[in-house]
Length: 95
Image 1: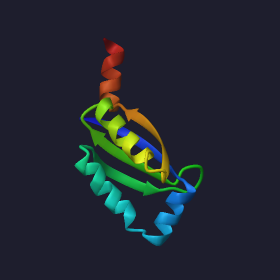
Image 2: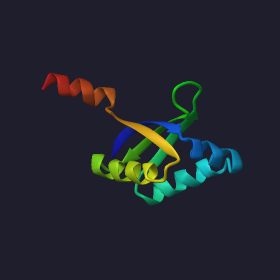
Image 3: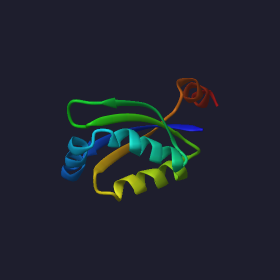
């Protein structure tokens, strides 16, 4: 499984949805699980982004599918980064 860092910014529509139904965040996390990824950690942020989520998925194709689905709803914009465990990263430098 691969790990991904997802920085999310709510759109105007997303902010309206969150205000009206705060539990929607947890519902979306359940939907992500049904799409084949898993939310490992999630934080609300102050600043440029609204949320930081750590997700696990099979591969880049799987997380891409999830991000396209979420983005197509019009309630958030995402910036998804692949996170490489430091030991794997260091091992790659030696080869």
